Amino acid sequence: MQDPVSYLRSTFKNKDRPKAIKAGLIFILSGPSGSGKTTLAKRILRHPQLKGKLIKSVSYTTRPKRPGERQGRDYVFISEGEFQSLLKAKKILECTRYLGYHYGTSRDFFNKALSKGLHIILCIDIKGASYIKRAFPESSITIFVKPPSLRTAKQRILARCAKTKPGEVNRRIQLASRELNYINHYDYCVVNDNLNKTIKEIVNIIKQIL
Image 1 (cartoon, one colour):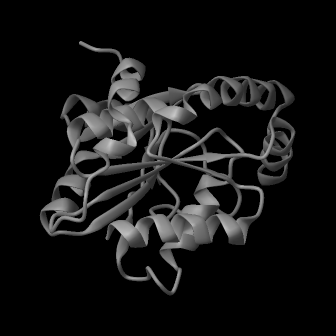
Image 2 (cartoon, one colour):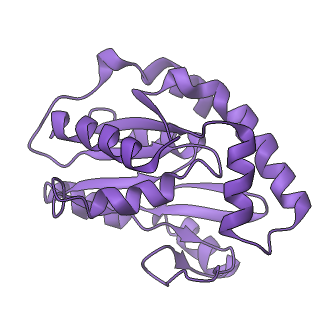
Image 3 (cartoon, one colour):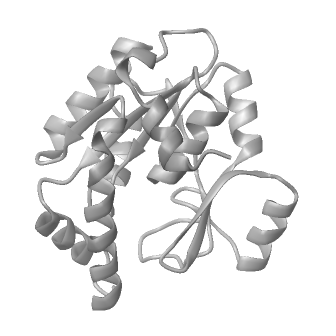
């Protein structure tokens, strides 16, 4: 089987970007921890020009809930045992392990949404994006969200979760540094140096495709 990064390298090209079709489309936001992709997705879903046109894919995760997060809105928080049961039943489309916790995308959610012609937006890592692209090669649009700098990413990580341990922050920054090497494999890249400007850029990308 071709590894995820090699597959990503061969498929994430502008010439392969899907055109507007009647079936549902998948808009994937990828980026390192601290890039702001989750905040962007929330704001894009509420944007006046796109409101009601996109639905969010809510991932499963085994990590603990952070302050302010809600079950079913931010993630579906489940135990490791529950996650493994879903995986065994093939109810998870793709999954990854990040800093000791599992994250996964619901296969049933995707199949039902796309069959109804609904357009999905989701935040996912590079490995997950490559698997989604493999499963839905003609329906996926990939957008890499880049932080202005690793220093900014670190500040955002610390601000988002004050209880994050220094060791975990350092591991996230190291991973972010490696993930930045794959920007050119995506259909689009936006630098999130100004939230409102970045939202406008992504909204324009989505509008020109829908």
